[in-house]
Amino acid sequence: AVLILPSGNYDVCNLKLPLQVASWLTELGVVAYVLRYRLRSEGHFWPAQEEDCREALRRIRNDEDTSEAVEKVGVIGFS
Figure 1 (cartoon, one colour):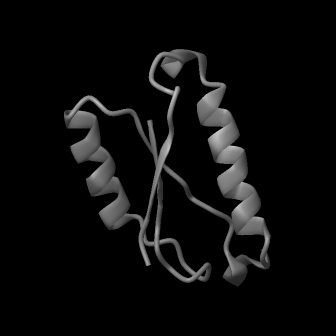
Figure 2 (cartoon, one colour):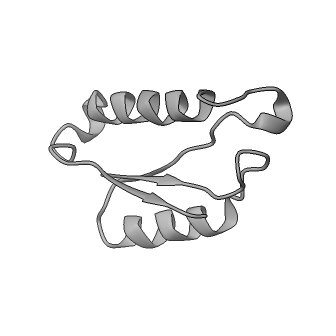
């Protein structure tokens, strides 16, 4: 499984490229997740974004539908 983190400097969440990468990875048979983290522009300051990432990883590891694929979880981030 792969968790994809969008760019946007925590002010915006640019999802276009991460969703394209997730689609490509899915075509290759990889389970891909795109994180939509809480934004500073919405009043959520650091470390809210790190907490969102940690929670997403916890959920991926505990996802019963992907239990075979989550022995290892990769992370891709855009900046």
